[in-house]
Length: 106
Image (cartoon, rainbow, N blue to C red):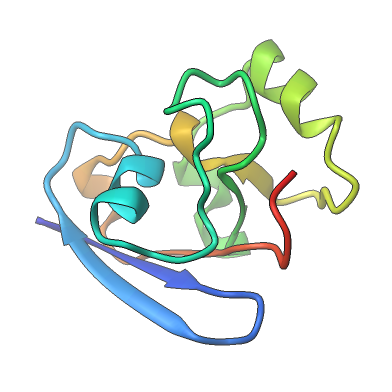
């Protein structure tokens, strides 16, 4: 099992344990974590699963694809550590991952 820490924009924390193989978005939705809308269901065709990856984890979550880059470019609150949680696959290497949700999903 892999532990992922979700922090809401207001500081509320939600720790979830999930199996490897799914996405960080699926981990949030399955466990009722607020702040992840996931309108497209994980097909990388919206940006409603936007998260900010804690800086120490950026090198472990994988690279941005051109499609993810295009979706994130539509976000008004994008930061250097922005990612779409549907594009981050849960692996054992991500045990302890910390992500923060923005105040609004667009």
